[in-house]
Structures are given as structure tokens and as C-alpha cells.
Image 1 (cartoon, rainbow, N blue to C red):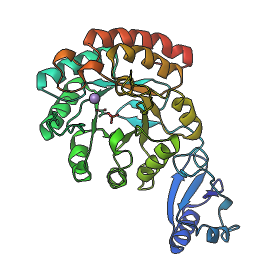
Image 2: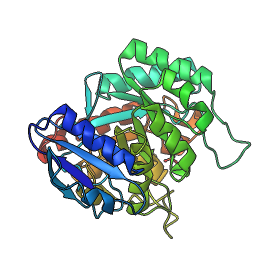
Image 3: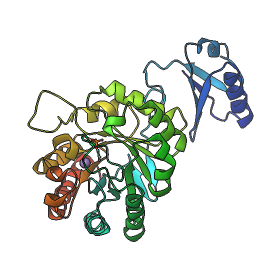
Length: 337
Ligand code: PEP
Ligand code: MN
């Protein structure tokens, strides 16, 4: 449920309401809007006691939230969330493009990719330092050395950095180098990791688990938000179906579905959704046409030599040509790029 404070409610009135709710053993998440303050309340089945606060000074209304994801849903937060990071606005008018290699392999590989994607209009550099691999014998990533290379690439190009954190014990380490913490598809239901990412207060990009419903996905986001971290980006990256031609099946309908249910920014990863580089451009165009706030794509200077996910990586030239088409599509759906 949420408590809507009256326009002009004083700070004292707001604090009194929050203190009272805490005294019931419930948690609060105040959202200080320009006009009104709204106080979200979470806790198991005890919210009826809050009803007794109707008529308290400063309270305009007390509204139950029916959506199971209390803070990720639009009921409590009707306006779109826009995450502002060093001049990049995720969830606003601009289509935000995140691009880079699957894994950071070397300084030369990363810098070559970073310079080219920056020149073509990407705003955020991706690159894995800790790689979740199906086989324990596959390349696992360069760890902190990769994080240092990502930070150096940001320094030179001005691109922000998104990289995956796979272990709750590494959250603090990754926060030192990255602008956005990625929680991978395999870890979408790792509630210990989600909680740690939430506590870090660092912007997070949460990927949809391959077997997760939209509801599961939004509840995973809720784990991050209830720790007080509202800067969550949702990434549709394909789900498991009976189709084997593509690595996963891109659930393009999830874009408008989630935009309707949630205020959080939604981006699409056509690289992991398809596993095939020639499908990345058409599905990126489809994602933006369907209302996604951005895309994240894998780009490698030499895909044939990639240590990870080469078959789905765009070449540098391929990325350029995709960006040219995205720039043509964006204004048609009322976006800039
Ligand atoms: C990735 O983006 O590097 C990745 C492993 O993606 P996913 O978690 O979607 O499989
Ligand atoms: Mn990959």
C-alpha cells in the first residue's frame, strides 16, 4: 500500500507518518515528488494497521497496491523512471545504445571496440570481467584486470561502463570500476545477489532469466528496489522455447508488456537472444520500434577470434551500419539517437 501525502505536507508530518509506520514493524520507501510525497509501505500482511492512520495530519489518501511488485509497478509510480548518469538519460527520449565485447580479452581488443562504438553513437560500453559460462573449462573472464581496462576505456572515451557481477562478494569491487552493475540472466533469481546489488545503491541492469515470466522478472527487480535502490534497468534477452534455431527466443512483446506494467527503463539484448550476428540488426530495429529504451549488443573487432560468443558478435562495420538504421528508426517512434 502507499500513503499519499497532501500537497504542501510538512517535513515533520512526513517524518511522523514514517516513524509511525516503522513502529508497526513495516518498512517505508518514500518517493519525494515535485508536488507530492508518496510513502510506499512493505511488510507481510500487517498493512491493515496502516489504515488506522487515515485522517492523520498531512495524509491525503491510503491506497492498496494490487500489483505483486509494489515498487517496480506503475501503480505506486505512474511516471517513467529516468536514470541519469553523467549526462546519459536511460528511460528518457534518447535511445541508449550499450555495446562492446562479450568479454574483455585484452587492452587492444577493448579499446578498438570502445573507440569505434563511441564514434558510432553508443553511450555505454559493455564487457564481461566475470563470465558465467556453461562449462567450467571455458574462458571465465579476466576479473579485476578486466575491470581496470574498462575503467581506462571510460577515461579515454567518456563511455559509461556496464559489467556483470556474478558473486555477492564482488559487488563492492565491481562498484569501484563500473557505472552500472549487470545481473545476468542466470542470476536473475539469485536473491542474495539482488539484495547485495540493491544495498550497493549502484545503478543496476537486471537481465530476464531464460525461464522467467514477466512477473518473476519484475519481482526480481523488486528485490533490488526494496533495498532502497530505484535505479534498475530491465533487459529482455530472450527466453527458452522449443525453438532451437536461435539461442533463445526474443520475447519482443515483453517490451510493451513491461512498459505497461512498470515504470522502469526496458532495454533489449538481441545478441544473447539470438546467438547469431546476422539477427542482431533486425531485432535491434524491432526492439526500438516496439518501444524499448535502448539496446545492448556484442561487438568484437575480430569475431572469429573471440574467446566468448563470437558467432553473435557484430563486426565494427556491422555495428556502424546497424547504428545508421537505428538513427533512421528512432524519430519515427518519437525518440532521438
Ligand atoms: C552477458 O551479457 O554477457 C551475458 C552473459 O548475458 P546473459 O546473462 O543474458 O546470458
Ligand atoms: Mn556474451
